[in-house]
Length: 272
Length: 313
Image (cartoon, rainbow over all chains, first blue to last red):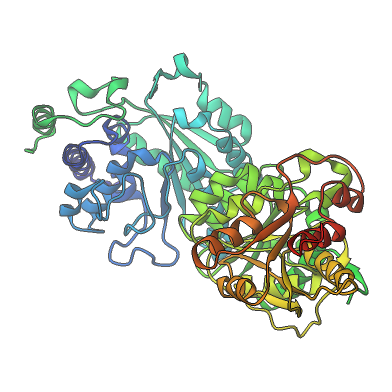
């Protein structure tokens, strides 16, 4: 493949800086689960998906649904980097009257579905994949959190995706192992994830969710695979890229103060 | 009035097959009840545009939100209990908040589900759906108006909740009746009191009005087929031109028609309003007409409510 992974790494870093910047200025938000999915977002928006930021609703485009809607800063940073809206909007996240809502809203250019209530985005993605088949084109990507898999609707959606053999649908699980109240195994065990999806009829892949080539390869394999939907179980580190946030459940939904944000930006090669 | 009896769900099934022939953008979704909700006819005629999602109502409405758009309109059906009740939050966030072009066509509403009993008799659906911003809520009174209102709903953009029944009910309208979403229809003129009825209670209200005419009371009957947006002008007219209002619904007296009419009247036209409906309790198994009598939703109950307004009880 001739994918430029140096460029993708730069994009991932820019997305991470955008995440820190947004949540610092907002004073609230979810850094941990946004940072863990930044590499996945970089590959999707800068390599894998056929989208046009100048024409966000172009027919036949690929679609991305952020089912784990609390990672909105990751999505917004990726959309801003791709030029869907000015980067300056990132400083207005969660503020009254601002474009960028606390959780994704379809009013925002490039956002395909309003999400935030867990599990629903996966179900909506199933509908979008059925629609794409009727329309004769376009792939659908949906990103779920590991804790999100505890929602019952996820398995209703999984069953239907396999039933309708939606090979144009690719689910990605951001398996960072942590949810609000602690480690998955302490709160509610979700493992084994790949095996669960496989038993539902998915083509299941397991990867390092921070390896850009592994992510790109998984999407290529999903595209080539016919007859069933694919799930990419991406093992990730919550808070990835910011030393003091990594693997800390406490950074699920907390904003950094100025000193913390400055340190985080420095680690990511930027300034606040 | 009152010749043949046809269930509004029957009208829904016929509507889908007719509409499917001219509207290629019409998609129908189902949750394993196609022979009861009457979507089976569409499934047979247009298998490529029909999706059975199995016994999974949350996913039914989530996927419906994903399928709508790009010019498509989705009619997604199950029993009212599982649509408005079980899937409420999915409908609120994935259909309401996004203004998805989904028509929630919910059958088997109310106590006339009958023998299946309390677990399947919903009296809360109108109240739940009415609280969702931008949701249009329809409750047709007979099979003819059901077809006409379904046609208007499918041709309109945005989310709708359409309440349909299991029981065959008398036909009230001619096929060329002119219905408009958000406009109540006066189905009987009267000077003294107004019964504002919705759904199958419109026929009961007409029966009550006939009885009361024999007692010297002239009762106006309105078919409030649209619960939201409510026809406030019709409520104001009833309050101004008659001496009191009875609301009649096969639904809880909390949050449905009585709620909507009272909310409007409290602000714009204070009036005496007496509700006929399910009185904050669960139902039970039985025959539909027996249940309507036992739970206070018969024509006699409407007549009694008017007599109370008239000081005759």
